[in-house]
Amino acid sequence: MSGINETIHQSMRLKIMAALSVLAPETQLEFIRLKGLVNATDGNLGAHLETLERAGYVAIEKLFVGKKPQTRIKATPAGRRAFAEHVAYLRHILDGGAPA
Amino acid sequence: MIIDPNEAAASLDEIASIEQRTRERLFYERSSLTLILWGVLVAGAYVFTYFKPHLAYGAWIAITIAGLAGSRLIQRRLGNRAPQTGRRGVLLFYSQLALLFYGCVLMVLLWPMSSRQIGAFWPTLVMLGFVLAGLFLGSFYIYCGLLATAMTVAGYFWTGELYPLWMALTYGCVLIAAGLWLRRAG
Image (tube, rainbow over all chains, first blue to last red; front, top):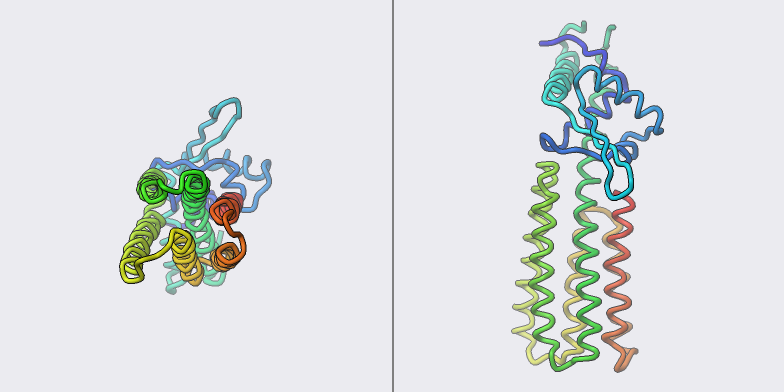
């Protein structure tokens, strides 16, 4: 059982990873949709995504759809694994396991 | 950092809530496209039958096939974005087929029906499906179903020869507006 993942455990980043992990592997979510899902401002979401990207948990793609810029995000395999381990760790604590 | 069981429980609740919301939004996205597709097809079919009533049967069969094929395409293209919502979408597609099947059975039992009666029968049946779906998916579908049913009944009794145009405007527009509303909500 892995210990606490402080990168993921932060409330906003936890929400981001939860939303992205629902999607099928390799499926991206538009920045604007993710923003609505996690109730974040542009700046706040951008900063947390940057942290997650640095950790290798999300991949961010910036592209143009027609003439409009669009940012798409997906959870990487490492991010999905880390999130699953973190959820397992939280359940372990809830089941009476020793907290880290 | 130390996490106590209360904090762990709160985090797990938050995760479950976001996962649920994400699935709902993806489902709404697909539903909205399907509604807009059917709204455009149905509105077009009613306008067509107003101007070419003798071709109505063929037009409606073509529209139904196009609508089902389009619904399936939307489901296939967007359904694999989230595996669990994809399953829900497949169930929704099969419920459309079930409604179509029972509609056909009822028509056989009630035949002969005038084109005006057929024009009211199908929207009313589909809207019954909306109201029933609303019991599981949310009150939005119930309101849409009731509104479109009320407009169908009003049009059936009070619009005379303009009935197909009334249905194109009301029934078709209710489906399109519902789709746009869901798209916005999603």
